[in-house]
Length: 385
Image 1 (tube, rainbow, N blue to C red):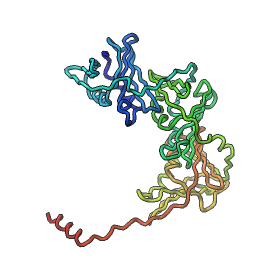
Image 2 (tube, rainbow, N blue to C red; image 1 turned 180 degrees about the vertical axis):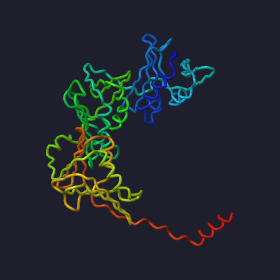
Image 3 (cartoon, one colour; image 1 turned 180 degrees about the horizontal axis):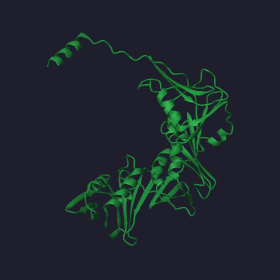
Image 4 (cartoon, one colour; image 1 turned 30 degrees about the vertical axis):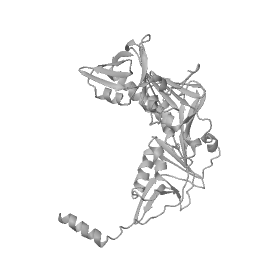
């Protein structure tokens, strides 16, 4: 294999493909597959975590000899630090990869391409094009479960439609739905693992993304990048069905910025080690938010009209569960709470359901244990020295 390519292009391709790589017991999966095609003048960089495969193409490369090898991850770091405009990649009969640029020469040990766990992806015949796909994913992905035994909720449910497209995620304590009007030009439903969603979201910001299904893979194509991941078969129930049964008792309107500022102020007394909890009460003229810890208390009021005030005891929530959604939103905000304390936040068509929690547990900080005579003596000696 031998080719010459611009450093910025090959480094960018390796950096992109590396998004799919996670530490694996399979040594070949820890590297990047480099494939060069002399006939087409194309170099492909492939990264994978077995479930997900990401391929980045570099076109118009000067390929004089086709071939493929698995390069070590350090290759990308060498390219980042190289000062040359162009890099030449060359392998010998022993599989040693040589990088040539300027007066520099690096020789790297590689792994045979046949050991790379390359997925057999069949490209779909039909695609749905989507705009703003990265934003659509991020506005709900934060609510998905990412670890633990409940694997069926470690996912994002995607429903693309020419009218209204939706993405949904939950970790049982909250549910998020992001909505995009006219984002897609066709209909398609996907259920993707959260690890795959977190990898594709940054790549989906470059423009139009083409989405297709080739069981068991969902395939995404855009900007010389191919992203394929195995779809999940089961996930949490859809949020839309739950919202149809949601009947609120207390409601008010404000802005995202105002609520976030009020929550941040009210939780200002909470320090590391405190039970993270705020109490929210809807009064006729304001939303009152309180935080409390051992010998510390803070309170903030958000002016807002509410025709049906909530009970004076209010409802308790994890403040992070509220601000996570607010950081993804902007503009006007509608707050609706039912008699059990389930709170629905709506902004620009995006919906977020938060479950209430028990009252805050006020914990007295653990006092330091008195020092023994031996510890006191040792401290004095250390100070004297």
